[in-house]
Image 1 (cartoon, rainbow, N blue to C red):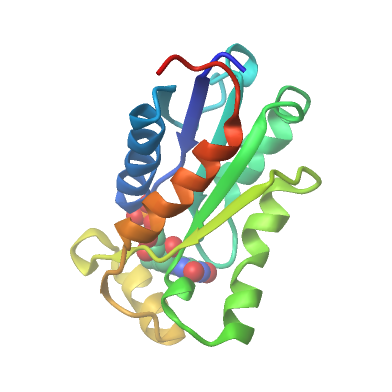
Image 2: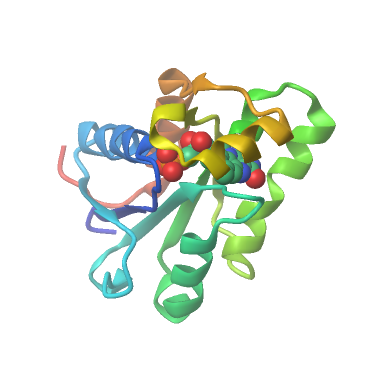
Length: 170
Ligand SMILES: Cc1cc2nc3c(=O)[nH]c(=O)nc-3n(C[C@H](O)[C@H](O)[C@H](O)COP(=O)(O)O)c2cc1C
């Protein structure tokens, strides 16, 4: 492991970008070379020693992550070390509901099973949403606001960083 890491993320309203940036920052603090990129079809995992993928949950699905994993399954198999999901369902502290809220990430990356899975509360900003999206949030009783917990995000990223191993240069 030479320390070239890809942190690739999807976002529709911007909040996952801040989370992915925080993850990349922790890796850089540990002297890894972390490239931060939006998930896009021509982004190849091949040049990297390790890949971390993250994205938001919309209507119970992580479409962008799922499509990327399906398209790059073979290259990811040996490199996919961690994945994270961002959603408002992680604001709740009801253990039963939290367990169900983790399913979209597991489904999106299946059958791959990286050793680290992170689940982070996100942000809803009515000013960035369409009328229909605002109605959808109201119907499901989603909280409104910025619930990103950067201490928890960085603690998770440090765990991932500690397990990457290899010969990055301090
Ligand atoms: C229309 C809509 C549907 C959503 N559906 C879910 C959902 O099924 N589960 C969940 O946990 N969060 C859901 N969310 C919350 C988003 O995942 C959350 O706002 C996240 O931070 C968005 O990430 P982004 O800003 O990177 O796009 C939904 C938000 C909107 C606007």
